[in-house]
Each structure stands twice: as structure tokens, then as C-alpha cells.
Length: 90
Image (cartoon, rainbow, N blue to C red; front, side, top):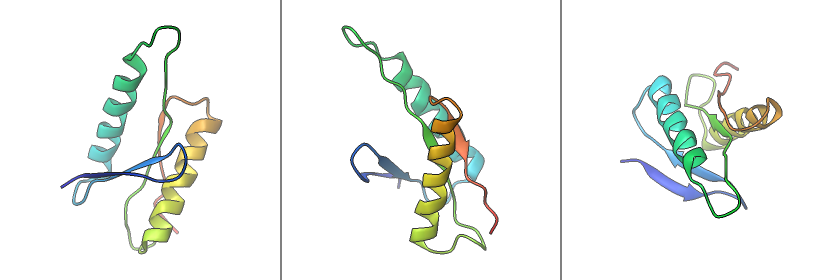
């Protein structure tokens, strides 16, 4: 079962157990595109998303969050409104 939680001021986390990283990236892209299509009266919103997964190097919740957070900041640095996969090795 997927779980969405608020993490920090403007950050959300989506936990999607037992799916390949490519499927998580696809889901993140669909979410990003859907949000970008929403038009408010005089503004629109975009999101930057970092995607991470557990691995032999990412074995704790703290590491998982750190890798996802680093990917998020890379997405923002690369111009925002995009999805970036975390480097999954140590």
C-alpha cells in the first residue's frame, strides 16, 4: 500500500513499497505533470521531485531520505519542475 506523508514545511514523501525504481520514477512524472496542468486564477504550480530506493548501500530510513532529498535539490538546481533519480550506490 502506498503512503503519502507531509515531511517538512513544503515537502511530501510518498512511500511505494516493493516497486522498481523505474515505476516510482514513472509515478513521480505523472504526479509532476498533473500538478503542472492545474491552473489557478492567476498562477500555476510546479513541483520538483527526488526519487530514491533502498539498496545494499541505502539500508536505513535516514539514508533513504537523505538520497531522496539530494535528488530533490538536484532537480531544483537543474531548473525545477522535473524528477531526478538519486544516485543509488554508496
